[in-house]
Length: 358
Ligand SMILES: [Zn+2]
Figure 1 (tube, rainbow, N blue to C red):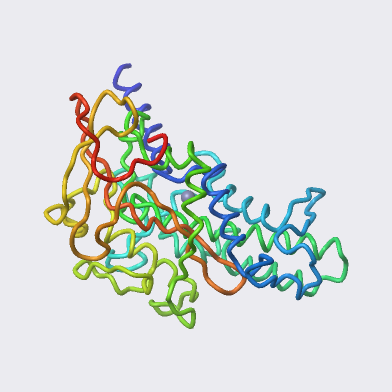
Figure 2 (figure 1 turned 180 degrees about the horizontal axis):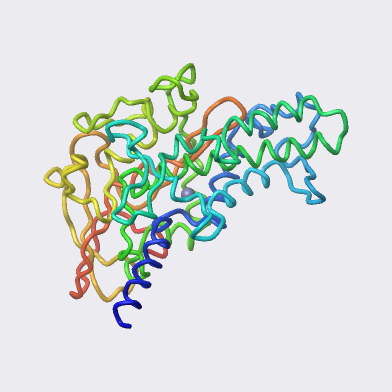
C-alpha cells in the first residue's frame, strides 16, 4: 500500500512538474504579453499599425468572438494565459522547452526519466500541425480577417489572430526562463519549499512590470530559419550560433541561446551537459532569499564569458520584433540562480540590490 501511494505521489509530482518553474500564466504571462503589445507596432506610439484596417483605438480596439468582447491587447494576453491551460493530460506545457545546444531541434524538447513527461521543442510546437494555435493558424486567421465579408466574421477572425499571436508569444517568453532552455523539470523540486523567482515575479507584478520599461529589440534575421524547412520566427528562439563552447552576449542570437548560456537553473548548476555558465567563473555569495528568511542560499554572480556583471534578480526588459508585434521578456540581469538551502543564520546582505519582497 505504502509503495502504491509513493508511486502515485511520484506520478502526480511528475505530471505537475512539467510546468514547474514556469511563469505564472494568469499573471506573469498575461502581463508580459500585454506589455509586449504596448511596445509593439500595434500600439499608438509604436506605429498605430491597426489604423490600416480602420481601427481607431489601436490595441484597445474591442473585438468580439462568440459573444465575448476583449480588446486587441486582452486577446493577446488571453493567448498567453491559455497556452498553459488544460489538465495534466491535455496541457501543452510539455512542449514549452527548447535546449539550444541539443544535437538537433528534434531532440531539443523536454526529456525526463518519466515516459509521460516529454515533449517536442517549443519552436517546433509553435509550427506543429497538432498544435491548434500554431503560427500558420494565426496567419490563416489573419488572412480570414482581411477577407471576411461581415463585421462579425472580421472581428472574430481578428480576435483569433491576436489570441494566436499570444500563444506564440507565450512560447518565446518561456525561452527567457532558464529551466525551460536547460531541460530542467525535476519532479521533486517543485513542492513549494524553495522560493523561486517565478513566484517572485507572480507576487510582485508592479515591480516586475517596471523592469519591462526598456525594450530591447532582437537583431536576428527573419528571412529564413537557422535549420532548413522551418518558419523564420524560429530565430527568436534559436539562431544555432551558440554551440556550448562560445557563450554569447548581446541580442543577435535567439533568446534560448542567451538564457541557456548565461543563467543557471536550479538543477543545472555545474551540470556537465551545460558548460556555461561556468561555476568557476562566478563569484559565490550567500544571502537570505527573502526578508527574514530563516536560512541562506548561495548566489552566483557571473564574472566571465558571455553576459557578465549581470546583477540582482530578474530585471526584465522587453524584446520586441517587428511584423505585427511579437514581443517577449528578456531576463537581462539574472546572473545567478539559487542553490543550497542552508539553515544558518542570515549574514549581511550581498552587495547588490534586493528587489522588494524578495
Ligand atoms: Zn509555458
